[in-house]
Length: 275
Image (cartoon, rainbow, N blue to C red; front, side, top):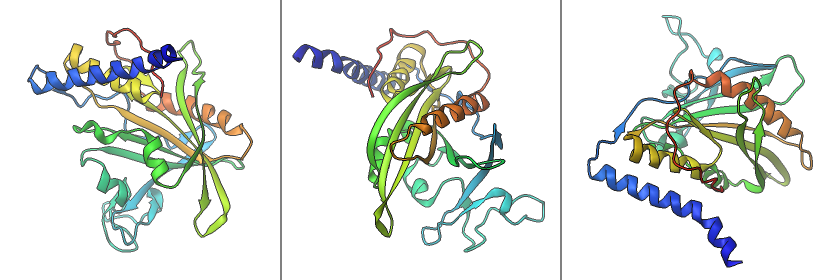
């Protein structure tokens, strides 16, 4: 019905209006301050329950593009891991060449592979992207993942129990499928789960994050750094076992990267935006 469509679009219109107003106030030099404050530490734990983490670095050369576990890199004379690619000599970075070419230069990123220790068990990738002065570092993953050939089979939000009387953590889950490169008859099925963390705020909604960014500018005069936390791994077609795996990982990972609690910011009325 027309009324239902109108109600559904109201949160997005509110977000757009808030963002436009925030942009106007910034352009008018109304005292909006970019800050280095974030809600998380840009560091992934080496141990996450039954999983052992291995930090990844990437060759910055497009022609090479190899990745390495930090602990497997040769050591420099001072005892620190080498910062050049063992295969081609190009600089190593926390981002691959494609990410370096697309993301603003002051974007922070760290990524680790987690393997079961002891096995067996699922292996997964965890990534944190932290925005810099240019807040465009973070965007909806539905856009870039589809551009990489992933077909979205399903998407939904789960509420992860954080225990100890803490509020649940909302995590948005995408289920993907795509043909295996060089083997068009074989389909790779994966999941991608994510949430956003700001200064004193957490959400799985891109729209809600944009609203909070805008209202922070308008009502608090600040533009905090937001983080985008994601988990990526394989799933079994027709099975929901990965949902429990995601909940288990998120319940351990989120507290491990969260900075100490800050006084909450005053909020505008909640809008419960859709994805």
